[in-house]
Image (cartoon, rainbow, N blue to C red; front, side, top):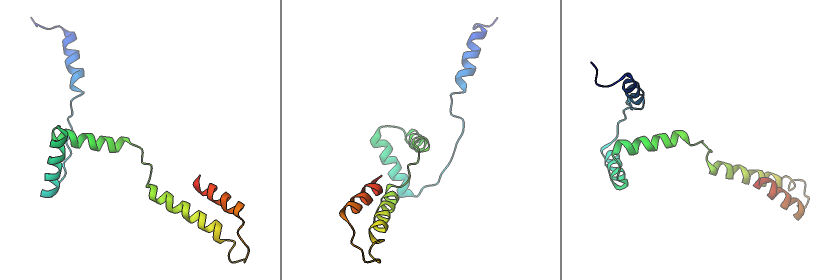
Length: 106
């Protein structure tokens, strides 16, 4: 006669799905491994848990792109708008300059 009923078996089976059962490996240099150990120890968490948290955080955050690239494009757009009047010999009115600046900031 079983000591536990069938409801205990279903709880046990459903809790097993929460266990981590997949392993991924990586190779590090001695210096990288030492740095990894130091950072995890400083945070007060096991090394594997810290690595897991960092990887999952990186995977879950949307990639916003590099802000430096956006700044370069903004400056380029501003320069194109400002310099397009120079070859024609026309003066660049301040009103147009301000307009170009606000458009590139958007």
